[in-house]
Image (cartoon, rainbow, N blue to C red; front, side):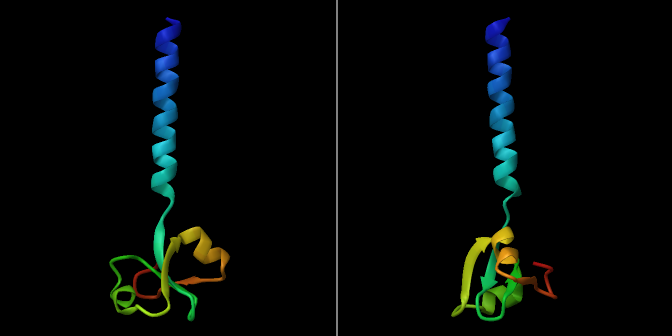
Length: 72
């Protein structure tokens, strides 16, 4: 019984960790304009010189706003 409980706890921990990692969304952030884009956005594909890949929360923390085309 105790072994089953430990296995169940381990499975829940792994599932929770995987969900947490999946929630972190990476965006393309233009450091000059302060606009962030989804990977599939045409504007992001054109952005080469001033763009970096960062977490969406970090882009917002830097004062960025979502792209009007893709919604970031």
